[in-house]
Amino acid sequence: MRRSLPFTDERHQRAHHFLVEEAAALDGHDFDGWLSLLTDDIRYRVPVRVTTTRATDPDRHSTMDHLDENRYSLTKRVARLATDHAWTEDPRSRIRHLVTNVRTFPAGVDGELEVESALLLFRSRGDTRPPELICAQRQDRLRQVGEELLLAERVVHVDEAVLRTQNLAIFL
Amino acid sequence: MRTDVDAVVADIGRGMVPAFVYSDPDLFELEKERLFGRSWVFLAHESEIPDPGDYVVRRVVDDSFIVVRDEAGVVRVHFNMCLHRGMQVCRAELGNASHFRCSYHGWSYRNDGTLAGLPFHGDAYGGDDGLRRGDQRLLSPAVETYDGLIFVNLGGDPPPVVDWLGEFTFYLDLYAHQSEAGLEVRGPQRWRVNANWKIGCENFVGDMYHTPYTHQSVVDIGLFREPKAHKRKEGVLYFAGKGGGTTYKLPPGDFRSRLTYVGYPDEMIDRMDETWSPAQRKLVDGDGFMVSAATAFPNLSFVHNWPQIDEDGTVVPFISIRQWQPVSPTETEVLSWFAVDRLAPESFKAASYKAYLMCFGSSGMFEQDDVENWVSITAVSRGTMARRLLLNSRMGLGADGQPQADPLPAFAGPGTARVGFGEFNQRAWLGLWAGAISS
Image (tube, rainbow over all chains, first blue to last red; front, side, top):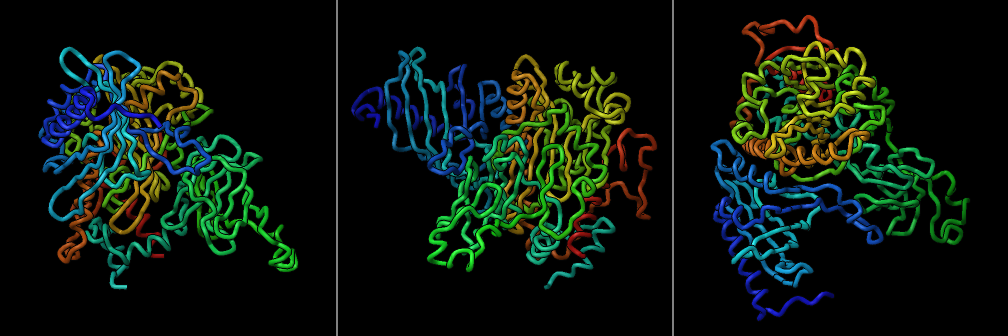
């Protein structure tokens, strides 16, 4: 088992701080602010999970994603949400990103950190529907750019093979 | 049964849809028994199981099936229930296996469905005297393929699937037979929505009218240049056999330039030119139409769009196959595959995949707003007032019930084709639905 940096390590504290600030941007619907936390070469993936026997490598079958985004497509998604015609988020979902179990590792690349975290995303829409939950593991790569840490790569491993949410108009 | 099926069928026959059909439990029971129990239903694409032993597990409503390529290369579909005590013999969703072994008492089946062995055959059954091992195999429904699409029919003595689909195959080929190699698919993405399964089917079969409004945001951001109303109403709606769909009218040009316009590279156009019939080519060449969304009865849909995928303005087409799998009267599992011609250049496949993810599927920018609407319809269709409301689905008909305009007299494809907005296709699909549940 890979050992993460101690919680007293400044690199871990900065990474954790980044994730909390990022969650605040997403929960506050500040998507332009969120985009400013991403590197220009961001890769953002949400692979489809499948149920396999223990003897079968599930990754062999992960050729499909719910999302596989670069900066252009993420910018388009944010621009769409900002139009007056993105019906699925008007009225908005009330969302809460609960980010925990944060583990930070030095990356092989200078100035980068690998960060694992657990995500529980709560989404409530309207006044009659039951709320929806997405539980996932995030694997992030954070990069030091000038004074800032930015998100360079995220892979979100959702814990359900069949998502129980009407769409991914939200960011994980 | 509370619901008066004859009255529902009569209302639908005049284009007035009782709102409660989108949540009614009585109708759902009839759909399970009479519609899904007797129709050819899509399960998987052959390219999902390319090698012997490859399998996927899929459902037809409540029935679980193993779709597997056996050691001889034959595509088989087995009812996923052990002959002994009824346990599911496969509990994964995909993989590769020579045998499926029941976890309850250990009966094991070869991937062709035959019983291979069971524990203590002699001690427990007295050998073949008590249970003839060689006679046993997992149950199978009728199985047939068209364009690599694997269909099953749970009813007795069904017609061949190609006859069932009828002239819709002409249009199906435009998605699934762009070369002799056919499609390869990725996925599916799977997600559950609190919407009745029929709403998506009706939307894809012919709702050109929703595109300019529901999907205005994707025009606002420059993702897709076509949905503006003046473009959409120039498209043709067609219905043939068991399916129908929508098209866009392309700018002036010929076969090659129009396929170039939607983003196909030359080599793929060459293969379409070689593979398609003269009439299929003429749909693009002479008539100038490009297929977009479509539905084959009951619950298999297709979409073909051509968004802009980067800041350089690159336009790339994509194909998606999807299934609206009923879970309950008010819940549907959506299965959405990305599909591309197997011989397409790898660079095209990658770009087309990107186009798909941006537009359709669980995160697609088109689809997000569709589902919001369908969830809302389903929720409000459950109440008392909805039992009094007949939804107006008469677009294209005059007060006398006759079409306000004639079908196109000359159109390259079979069936009936009409230019512009209209709910002819939704009525045709609902007519098939009404026929299925009332007989």
